[in-house]
Each structure stands twice: as C-alpha cells, then as structure tokens.
Amino acid sequence: SRSINLAVVPGDGIGREVVAQGLKVLSAVLPGDVKLRTEEYDLGAKRWHATGETLPDAELERLRTHDAILLGAVGDPSVPSGVLERGLLLKLRFAFDHYVNLRPSKLFPNTATPLAGRPEIDFVVVREGTEGPYTGNGGSLRTGTPAEVATEVSVNTAYGVERVVRDAYERAKARPRKKLTLVHKNNVLVYAGHLWKNIFDRIGQEYPEVTTDYLHVDAATIFLVTRPERFDVIVTDNLFGDIITDLAAAVTGGIGLAASGNINPTGAFPSMFEPVHGSAPDIAGTGKADPTAAVLSVALMLRHLGLDTEAARIEEAVSADLAERSDPRTTDEIGDALAVRVTG
Ligand code: NAD
Ligand code: IPM
Ligand code: MN
Image (cartoon, rainbow, N blue to C red):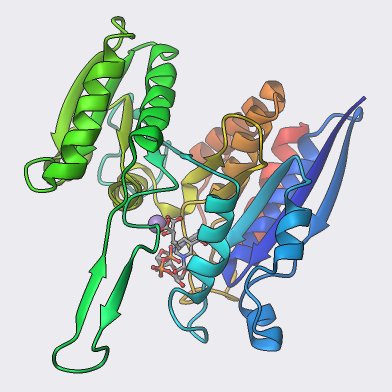
C-alpha cells in the first residue's frame, strides 16, 4: 500500500491559515489505500522569540526523513527582516538542494485580473533555487557610518546553471508548444549573463525540438503584462525568478492562487511545496487569505509524488470553484468548498 510521510511547516501569519486548508483538501482527495502521516514542525517567529532558534540542525535532520515538505510562509514584522527568511526558508532550499523552483502560471477563470478573458495563458517559470544573489555571499564594511559599503555578490556556477537549464529544456520538450525562454540581463550583468546564455545555447543543441528565445528581464516584465501568451517555459536566475513570478501571479488571477514547488529532481532530498506568497501580516487573522495557492501547492506535491490523478482532481476542483466563485468567502469557506469538490 502507498503512503506519504509529510512534514508540515505552517510558519507565520497566513501561512498557518492556508496550510490548514491545504491539509484539509489533501485528506479529502487521498484514496483510502494511501496512508497519510503528517508531522508538524514548530518553526517560525514564535519559536524564534521563545528560543532564538530558526532551524536547529536536529530539526533539519528530521525534516530530511520525510517524503515531502508542505510550508506555509515565514516572516513576521516582530522579527528582523531576513532572520527567518534566510535562517529557515532559504536554509531549507539550500540544504535540500532545491535547485528547481517551479512556479506555474495559468489564467484562471473569473478572477480579478487585467487579463480576464484572454485565452491560453499557461506557462511555467523554472527559477534557479540555490545560487544567484541568494547565497549570502557579501558583506558590509563600516556598517552604519556615512562610509558604509555593502556587497551582495551573485554566485553562478556552470554546474548550477547547467542542471537547472537542462531541467527547463526537459520540461519544455514535454509540453505541447515546446518553447523555452531564457530571462536574464546579459547586457549589464555580463559575467553571469554570458555564463547563462552560453550554457543555454550549448544545452539547446541537445534539444532541437525546443524553440528558444532570450529576453532581458526588464523587457520580460513588459511581455508578462501585454502578451503573456507568448511564454511556455521560462528559465531564469533566482532573483529575477522571484520578481517575475509575483508579477505573473498578479496578472493571471492574483497572488492568492500562485503555487510553487522547490524541487530536488534527484530525489536525494525531500522537495518542498509552498505558495508563492508570504505571511501577509496585513491580513493575517482576518480570514481574508485565499488558501488556493496552498491547495494548488498540494497538487504540485501530489504530482511530484506520482499521484497524478489526485493532483488533477485538485486542479479541476480549483478551476470549477473559481468559475463559480462570487461572494467574498473566508479562508475556511474556500477550503471547505474545495474539500467537498475533490471528494464529489
Ligand atoms: P506577501 O506575499 O506576504 O503579501 C503581499 C500582498 O499580497 C499583501 O497585501 C498580502 O495581503 C497579499 N496576499 C498575499 N497572499 C495572499 C493570499 N493568500 N490571499 C490574499 N492576499 C494575499 O509579501 P510581503 O508583504 O512582501 O511579505 C510579508 C512577509 O512574508 C515578509 O516577512 C516576507 O519576507 C515574507 N515572505 C515569505 C515567503 C515565504 O515564506 N515563502 C514568501 C514571500 C514573502
Ligand atoms: C519567495 C519569497 C522568498 C524568496 C523570500 C521570503 C526569501 O519571496 O518564496 O518568493 O525570495 O525566494
Ligand atoms: Mn517572492
């Protein structure tokens, strides 16, 4: 019989609220022969205030033993910016070598978007997850003085770029349109930009069936708003990928719908699934958080674990729910409605 040994990191703010709905839908969609075991990890602002810990090594070792991790969001106004984001979220992405940060964008029906009614917006961003300006390679001199100097060095290795570019080509090859766009800024960031472009072109020779193009990231933001249907698969660096996926979410239905997977394709470490959004302190506790992104992240997780039928059931439930959605509903109500749909 099949089983899922799931680690749950609800985290902070609306992270906790939306993860509860994700788990509700997960329990509802799983067939009887799939045993679900969940273990909740108390990590985030509360833990940090109580103990000063972000992610102790012992917890990291325990997290490693799970089949997958479901994360809500971390970050809280009461904690200095970066402490939890770097010490918990990025630590997990780096420790478990989540080099493919997968962020699909689909135009959902009946949502508040400037693109409503436009057909066939369906692309996926393959965001590099372990390098770029995120590695913490930098420092500050003469901190706090008028002569302060800060550096934040982007790290790009041929190894790291090649593996994520190859993954993006494989994904493009498996999709009907077979198109891959590299997004970077090689007119200014000439060292990293040329590394990316050279590897992109070289690997491309192994994928003659995949059509390729290149966009500078600033121009990519134009097309994401004016002509998003031009995109199929996008591959890009860690920071550009962070920025364009919030934009992509906003134009295709809202940040409350955008799901992501932090994937280690080798299977050496558990992959981690989380909404693209953060802990949204401005709406935490109000019941206004849309749990759909968390629910769709559960679908990405199920597909990663080979439960394609159940993943599709969740995605169909979300489409149907959005198509009929009218009155504003609470976080709980949306979760309940989706749980009913996946069983029905
Ligand atoms: P955010 O995504 O939390 O919020 C941006 C805006 O989107 C806010 O107005 C918020 O109310 C709205 N929003 C977000 N999710 C929503 C949802 N599900 N339903 C309805 N509205 C939603 O980004 P931010 O304000 O820049 O960051 C807040 C905190 O979250 C910071 O500490 C940040 O570092 C952290 N953060 C964490 C993650 C993560 O853990 N994966 C991701 C992004 C930001
Ligand atoms: C995201 C978030 C994170 C990122 C932060 C919180 C570290 O914005 O998951 O998109 O920049 O990757
Ligand atoms: Mn982000």
